[in-house]
Amino acid sequence: MNSKACCLLAVLIAFPPTVFAEGSEFQNLDDQVQGAKEEVLQINHELMLLQEKLLHPSSTEVSLFLSLQASGKFSLDSASLSVDGRRVDEHLYTYREVEALRKGGVQRLHTANLTSGAHKVRLTVSGHTDSNSKYSKTRDFTVTKGSGPRLVEF
Image (cartoon, rainbow, N blue to C red; front, side, top):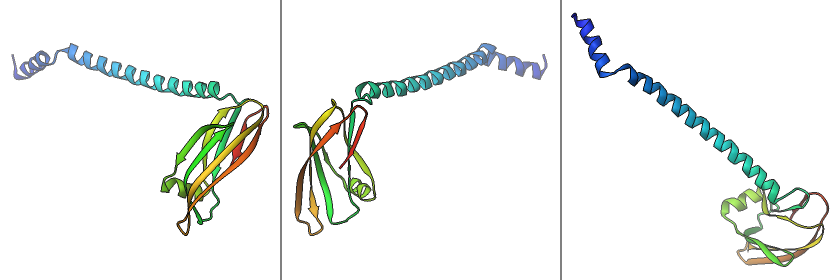
C-alpha cells in the first residue's frame, strides 16, 4: 500500500462519511430552528396587533396626549390624569423627557375605551419655574366622545 492510500484510509477511519452527513443534518436542523424563530416572532407581532385592536377598538378609543410650549420658564416634574373621577395615569418626568417635550415632542398619557358622550378629565401638572419656585396647576376639561376614535392634546 502506498503512502497516499494510507493517508486516505486514515482520514476515512478518523472521519467516516456519516460524520460529514451528520454535519449537513445539523446545518439543516439549524436552518429549521432559525425558520421557526422567525415564524414565532411574526406570530408574536400579529398577536400584539390583534390584542391592540381588541383592547382598544377604534370606535371607542380615546387617546390623551401631553405637550409643552417651547418656553423655558417652566420645568415639568410630574403629571397626573383622572378620567370621570378615576385616576388613570401618573408620570414623573426625567430631564430627557422634559427636553424632548420642549423640542415639540408629544407624550401619550393614556389610551382608554370610553362610551359616547361627555367625560370629565382632570389634569394636574407639577414642576418649578425658572426662579425655582414650586408650581402646580389643576385643570378640568370635558371631552366629548363621538362614534369614532378621539385624540385629545393638553
